Length: 223
Length: 86
Image (cartoon, rainbow over all chains, first blue to last red; front, side):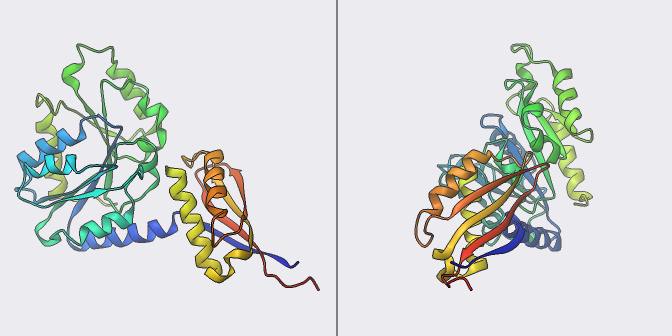
């Protein structure tokens, strides 16, 4: 039999990356900053988003794409805080959002009326690190109930993120979490990581987070 | 779950490269997987084996080649074109 070998040598993610580049172009053309919010399940990113939408949703023209493996629970929670469209993506088992899903969600969002797009990714610190969604920056959210070694266990996610939110800091007096060690671990994998310290529940640190978002919309980052 | 998504994308790329009619002749699929790619090679192998058993594929062998770094690449496709050797 005649067996021939076809040399391919193409990135498996090439198709996703092409779509992500297109998403990035669309957002840049519309002057929209996009943050990809990533975390493990239960870090509090939906509540952080709820608070953000309630405080800044209208002022900053925030649109949301909320991804979940099953249910529209998060999207429903977020929609209570804004009249703006919250676009839900149910992945039906997939452990991450991909660029195609975000591109399709953008078709339903009025980008001319949007200045900040927040993508709430599926709760998972592994897989979403591999999928470029066309975002301006990733924001990794982790909480004081998760342990200081999360950045060491999931270095790719912390390396790819430009910002980190340490959430649930109101629980620091109740849990054996060493913030200094957590920061040192995070900076050992990404020295440039910029931190925010919040409790979305109690409101601690939210003013700094909101100021950061206001500044981001005023002076968008270079990707 | 992640590995299954990647395996499905590898199969889609094979179809794109060869055309659907040629897929039954696919005998081997080489994939470079970096140590920092975030993938479990054994799991990817398992997923590829499962997908490559199903039509239009006919049981092509997935060959996972470990590499340094975060590379994730379809390296090569080996095809039996059905013609006798010269």
